[in-house]
Image 1 (tube, rainbow, N blue to C red):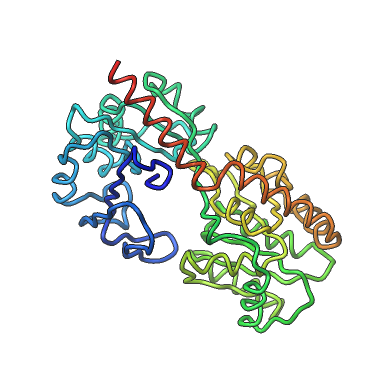
Image 2 (image 1 turned 135 degrees about the horizontal axis):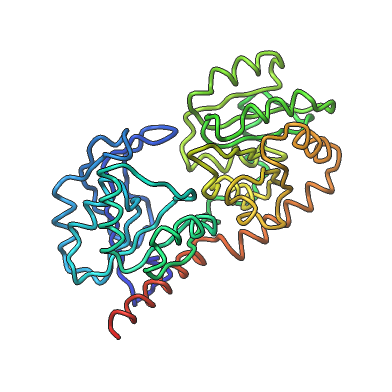
Length: 357
């Protein structure tokens, strides 16, 4: 946003000094070349997302006379309520939410959500399914838009030699195509469906699972049956993810809808697109809207259909090249960070103009 805004916008980012991430602990750090100013603020209980909260340093920052405050916390959690309470009344506040299912939250979260919604000038959802879920719950009273995640095309791009280096590190020589997974090792990501599908595929393959989570031991036990054809890789920092993506001949995102969750966006989808990796994905949640015709989609939870798609991709390199080209085109025209950043600023401009009017 700092780059896209040019001389019109000056961006300051306030972020927790430390956060318990899904895949690994995160210590916030300054990155080379950033044009925005970074303020690291204390945050507490970050391993409990609904009740984690910020220290008073954030309150001091929010009272700094900003033209607009953009909040990347959910409007129903304690941290989101803090930001709504601490932001001065005459400063427009915009929430960005990942909700995709209409839920009635228990107290005090229901009260926090009502207050945050009443207080904000507008809100963003990661996808169309989020907008559809929230509009009937009173969110239609405020300006809103769909705002997807973006991808850094200077970091994520086709780089075969980087992928070859990863394969060498894994003691894999050239030969069998690699089926990849990237993300959290949790039930809702469809890992049991993917392993069941691979069990059904008669063609030769290798499989690489990159991420971390409670299903790690399940994956290792399953993979032991296939010896060195399966690799489980954990603890990978984000700036090394492109190398692992480039080591894949295809990536699978077999997410499954649960009673309290469905795929919100799928960052791994656009990152795979950017690296020129063909994608096979389920139709869970927002995935069909994110991928369009740039990925092969299958019914969520259907191991037979996923196995059929894998078999086609493994047997047809031309088909893989076609989907790789589609993915690159989609990410360059829709999800590149400069495009997503400009969409943010255009929405902010609309809200500021509305307030001035």
